[in-house]
Image 1 (cartoon, rainbow, N blue to C red):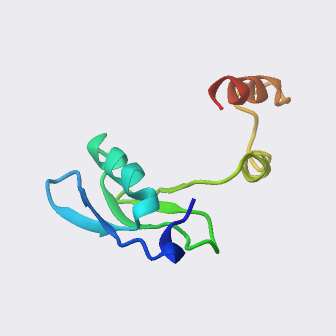
Image 2 (cartoon, rainbow, N blue to C red):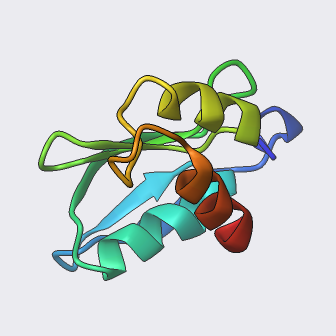
Length: 98
């Protein structure tokens, strides 16, 4: 949940290269975890209650945090991961993980 409107201050996190950066407190652990996994980040925003939280990676990819309905909608735009023309395996894996 976004804490930006509650007056929470930004939190300092450790980046992949040892530098520190200030990020929104509600996604600070996510940003720090991504960097500690060796995936350099270049920007992040909690969305301030208006957009989904996002973390921009140095390689051009973007990590977004969305609810299940939005994730399902996005997944429908792509071919099934099983290549079998149905979403059965995808849905099963999603339930196991989620």
